[in-house]
Image (cartoon, rainbow, N blue to C red; front, side):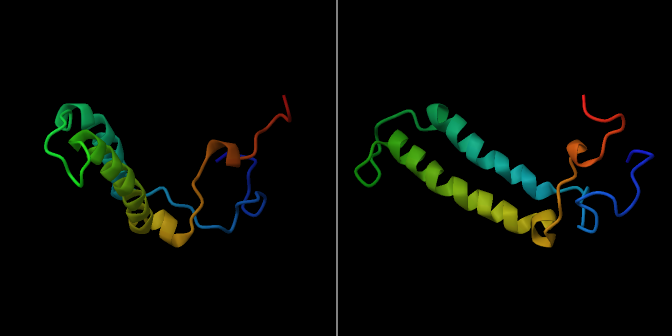
Length: 99
C-alpha cells in the first residue's frame, strides 16, 4: 500500500479482499492436461466410442469436462463465494500524476 493511500480514498475500499491460499485453483490445470495428453493417451482410432474414433471422443469429452471443472473451481474458491475483489497493482493509486 502506498504511503499516501488512506482508507476510504479508492474506488474498491469497503469491498472484501482475499490474499489467502486458494488450492482449488490448481484444478484449473485439469482441462489443460486433458488437451495436452490427447496425443499421448488417445492417439488411436480404435476403440470407437459412440461411433467416434477414440481421439475425437477424447477431445469432445475434454471440451465438455472443461466448463464443468471451471464451474467447480469457482464454487470451491472462497474469493468467488465471498464476492471479494482480486487485489491488483493497478487498483492502488500512483504518486506523481499521469505519465
